[in-house]
Image (cartoon, rainbow, N blue to C red; front, side, top):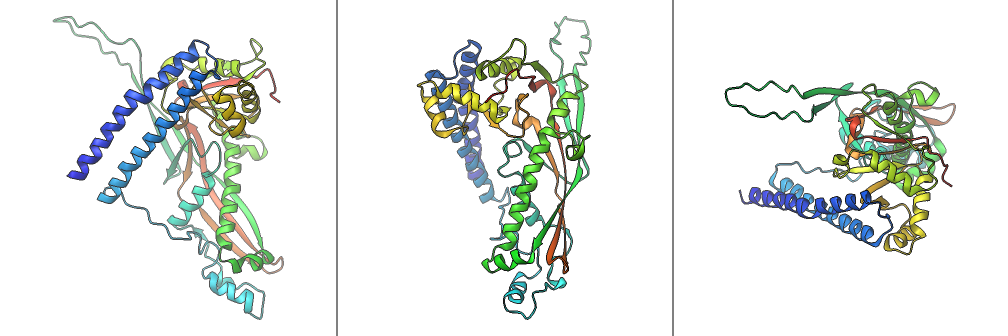
Length: 403
């Protein structure tokens, strides 16, 4: 009971801190942007710093709750082995190591190779962590783990100005303003085929981490390509046809919910007016959503950093030293992704974009004596979708290619 009380107190502190500290800072930044203040102004930089500090404090408070729940048994503590990839390729890597280093033959015994099929839950979880890991977009948007081929993203909409005057002895007509809809994730399967040479195994297996090294390299390579498809997949052409990415999903939005903003009229020649126009395209009531985010190409980010760095302000100095790390526009974090087309820029809450991935990751391995290599095939199923078009601002047809 004491623990429950402590957790509730922390939750109350979080709500109070958000209402009294975080929300006012965001509203103040929004007000400054709407008054066409410069993002390089000291007052803006100071507010952004306070916002970062406040969000870090919120993270620490949420971690307190998680630890308390783990200690109380409400949430299971996740215990991982020191090497979740042991057995990723070989059933008994120690036996293989001994044979390669001390045996009479350089052949790999087929019985030593890991059996084909689903990765264990722990291995798959660790593998998918590396897939998402360092990818600029996949690491910040919502990842939805799926147990089946499809999954619904339910949406509830409410009409505006539906309140009616109450008149005694008069029945009020139903507003019927609440609408229900759903987008769907429907996974597509993709395969990564990798050949692992015998020479590589011989050179690395003695170091105890060959399996982990191979697994992480393959997972990161797959993640890089999934991050590319997240923006550029068109479900039509060649490699890009594997799946539909966010750009195609936004363009094909039949409900015309997505807010399309043509950036070529009037011509925009610098980054700040570009960001300003994108920001103002987003309805005012959504601009301060907690995880609102801007997604842009390195060209746009470089132009913006150049404009900030040219000003002798705290934010300008920070940009010169730290580059795009921590880059923001009036408190809205900017995700810089080299896979985003240079002609486009987006603003939407990170949790509005969803990367769906099936929990079951499979692998098949085979020893090919003629080519002296282990052939590894990893199969992964995934999809991309967004929840609400009305909170997506898509800037297109950028008039300038930023150098």
